[in-house]
Amino acid sequence: YIEKTMRGPAAEGFNAIEAKQWAESAKWLGLQVLNAQQESEKKGFVEFIARYEIQSAPQVIHELSEFHLIEGRWFYINGVQPKS
Image (cartoon, rainbow, N blue to C red):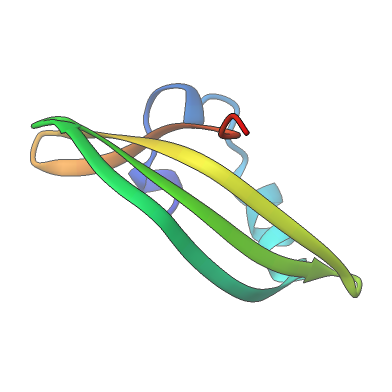
């Protein structure tokens, strides 16, 4: 699913096997959506914090994700760490 919903920089170099192995090694603890904003009819952003553990070590992903509407479907284009 992830691979099918990516375009642009996010899809470059994506390795489905490695992504699956990584996701299976993680214990997901929660997802907090901080902000969702549609900049235009075809471009939007979602800022989130995802919490998880790998080998009992707590981890956090804080990302500002960019999405584009392409042929009626939203695709993940890129993600960056928000500026503090």
